[in-house]
Length: 390
Ligand SMILES: Cc1ncc(COP(=O)(O)O)c(C=O)c1O
Image (cartoon, rainbow, N blue to C red; front, top):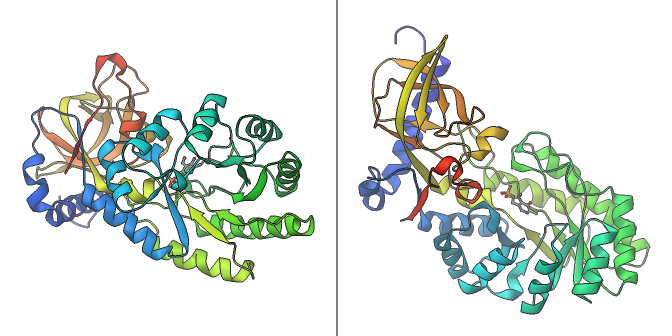
């Protein structure tokens, strides 16, 4: 490597720096875990998860914070968050049972999935959950039937541009339909409680929050004119973490969002909520895999590892770019990283710059705490990464 610094070198040096800082901050606790006998594993910094929650809570001081369990449902994570008083956002019977068993308080549990299985609503209602998201008349009918007199909040569609994991196509309605749904809920004996939106996961575009808060404010006013007194605004998730590029910080987003609220909501809602998942666990986990093979294919150099998109790295398929690090020095080469299964879709990353590894080397995959193990299957007989809390 001579001459000017190139992109590959910057990419590797940044990953190296990120790895070294991550380890340095936790050295005493993490040192002996960095060379596991069995791979793949996901090391989760549980103190870090608690601190991340407290940081979000501190910055979003006026908000109730509900951790979106889907991001990482490991018992160690849930127990720790329950200990520091977090609320939880759940979608399934299994998630809800787990949260209750590990210390979550039912008054601090919400369910923001706008289309829920009837059995889930039934179970949630039976244990005391009374707040549900909706974005269709059918869902209102279901909640009226299974969970009468509950509070409902309507999901509006907002832009997801600039979010690495958009969530906009599947859920959410325009404000006019949202108003009709709230009125319908009111006429069905439910309590029209508020509004929710999701700016897209891993959102690095403040404009999404801008449009979302403005749309919410106009729906709020439309509802008021119809005699519906909404009380709550739920801003979903979207707080990003660092991958192989810098992201907006929790402080940046909180500062901006609070300014929007002052500007567009002259009277503040009685309750404000956020439900971050990735922003709490994403950068507190490091996955360790092993190199199992190498090959030259045409002009491409391929590196194969013992995990893959079916065993934890599913988000690689949708645009999440993890930082990768190996503890070697020497000339950087450009690699395609292939997953462990026989499936040709199982490609974890392209254009990754690393010194030449050997079979058996550890590959460190940074910022792997969110949406990894929860997505993992044992396709082709390969194990999911074992979670090691530390
Ligand atoms: C309803 C809902 N709330 C919260 C979240 C968490 O989002 P994030 O991980 O971007 O914070 C999601 C993610 O899919 C979601 O669907």
